[in-house]
Length: 394
Image (cartoon, rainbow, N blue to C red):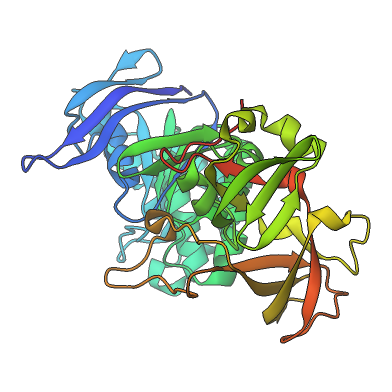
């Protein structure tokens, strides 16, 4: 096994377009690192440069201690798994898994042993004599994984491997791939546009947008402390509510004005964001995760200064929670890159205000049309500079 180091990696095409810009990234030995971002952000280009399928315009790429910028793909000791499986339909499962070993001239006995080991690991022993067309989508993906495993490479590269599977099977395969990587222990670089995959599978997540690395962190840290507006908007489902607000001083503390609503910031909120002192009287971007809102009839401990009044516009009952939507008359902030919209799609507008999503306890009695008090956990509120989009912390 070996780590992967990308130092100042840039990919520029002949037309001048830079798909990846000055990328610095360390993938540690044995780590499962997932790179996530919207369509066209440069994540697959990064993977293809590691694989040797794309030339590197500038920078240095190392696998282990070896610089591999000019090393042929077959000599980099990596194995790839694609979203379309790339299996040979006329070969059996066993022959597909062992094909690379056969090409490498391994002895038949060794091929049989290694294919058998991979098949047991992937629960494919009963399928070895079948053709790919006789398998389910999940089984075909396991065969593709088996073909990578038997090579015993230094690095696994997985490019959107679950995108062709249905939703239920994707959930199952997420868990299987994560467990498999943990058991095999091979350094793994996994590319996806699905932030749920990134958050549930990775040791660390690298968020990229427009070819520029935005943040690399453990999944929970990424969620709790996004470095900028893009990461804040992209990570989380439902996504973070983003709107403009004004920071003021009041009664020896700080107050947040959101349109016609005013919130007293708790001491814990101020302690988490000491740099707010430099933003008194200024407009900032305020980010509030859905779970930081609750029906005040249930969360009754919040003081009056940390509650707002709003009319419920919609309720989605999910059994374990209710997603409740309401409007605030604070100006909405939208990061269209983070929305990853299809070409030609438009952002849904709710007038001059912001449509807020809140995660309420399923016991809430709030119904559409009700005007209720909503508790806001202000120590969980995020703040971003209006001009730079960077998080306001220290």
